[in-house]
Amino acid sequence: DWLDDNRSPPPQRHGSDLPPVFQAAVPLHEAADIDAPVETRDLLAAVRAGDLARLKQVLGDGARPNAPDLRGERALPLAVRAGRLELVRQLLAQGAAPDLRGADGRTPLGIAALNGNAAIVRVLLKAGADPYLRSATGNIPLYDAIQLERLDVIGAFIDAGIDLERPGRTGLPALATAAATGRARVVEYLIGR
View 1 (cartoon, rainbow, N blue to C red):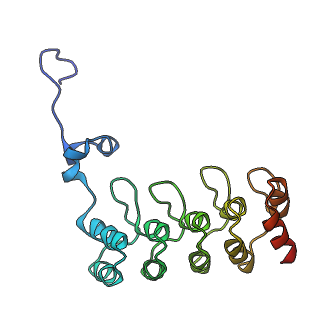
View 2 (view 1 turned 30 degrees about the vertical axis):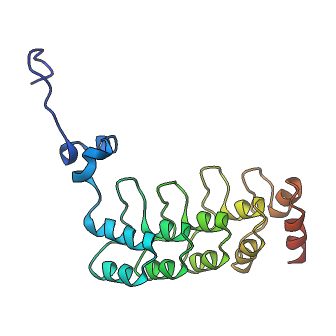
């Protein structure tokens, strides 16, 4: 065994021969042989390009809609981040899980709320996305929308029946959070609803 023998060097291992835990640390110029499957790369490329026809083709050819690439990026969070509503609908129709986080650790619903995309928020909620999943900051998407004064997103959450009394990371419900953080437009909006 090379550990017991000081005379022989440890074996050299590269690429896919490495244990999975070490593969993420491989320099990018050596990572070609451990990258995501071709189908996953093609799926993500179609999403990045906004190419609905190509997306349908790749999914029809057997690409898994929830498969991550080496960095942990997934098709649905990528489509949401780009604001591509039709791609989001197609991915959900093909079985993309609405709550799987992307490479940045955010849920698709959290991304849509931060981006102010009420249409995508509605589609994700209808598809069963959990509006109470917390982000890395401890907030649920509603409270991110409150902080950024995304009134149409807040309206989408209210229309979906979100519990406005459920506290955010500060322990306050929605109206009190808006008031405490000086979001006067949000306070007026919530009182008017």
